Image 1 (tube, rainbow, N blue to C red):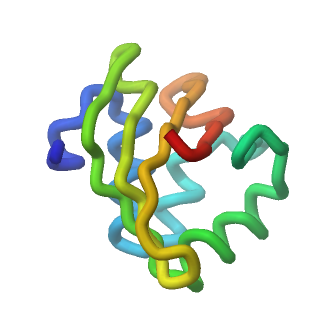
Image 2: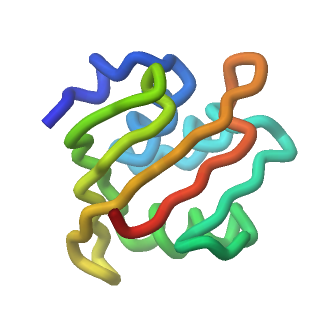
Length: 106
């Protein structure tokens, strides 16, 4: 596993750190105000998705690998709803903040 402190891209590092700390304020600070996301190929409402899949269900990311300058991760993602699953995360970064991320099973 890769320690989140060692992730290459600072915006992605802030995102993973916020998820693992269950820190909603830090999570949204890592994003642009108009950030978008998709889960398994379907665009989702980011706020509703984050509440359900991360914050109310204790989401946690164990990073297995990174690529594309740290903007693509393979993660063992777990939460209280779904348990543990191997997922891929791809991030677009604009001005040091995540403007879009896409996640799905790897």
